Image (cartoon, rainbow, N blue to C red; front, side):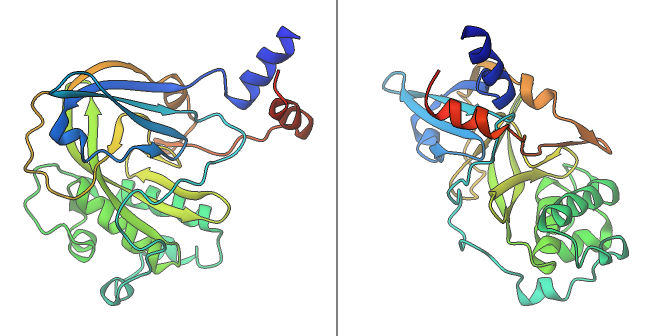
Length: 255
């Protein structure tokens, strides 16, 4: 029985979970979006009067994608604006009109990753039209462009504001989410990943980046699952993992 329990856990991914724990000031922790995320959850626990311990957990090998609640104060299913509808669709994406929403998502993120150079100190305008014309932008510009192109192709998408917890420290960051049928909101970050972004990404309420990040401390991090996602042209891609029906049913009854 133990062998089959371990086998089930390995196949469904329940035996492994990426996790990041950090401590942050109470004021900044108040802006953290706690609760269910794309593949796991964000939880907050008071550490002392001045700081909070934040735990980010994700299971990327599960049998199905969770349908996460909207993480930003955006419309549930944002459509293309009048300006976004006027964006010239790159010819490489023109053939995606009849593709599935997932194919459109992967194709768009790959295109932005390959054709828009990331320059974090870029001083140009970061709106979608400007970034498309200049083919260079910050993380915000690449996210804005990917979201605009997806919306133009009929895929609901939005920009996410938050923190990227890098090994050398936390930085403000922007990435994106696209809403897929039967899958909910799936995150992406041009140049990094599509379908999942890992536990180092922490959504924050609001776009105010003037708040100092002093006092943030990463306590521990484990990213085995994210590190082993398959790569497509340099992009980590998270696909739902098929689970045999008899194993899925067995797992629901407990082991």
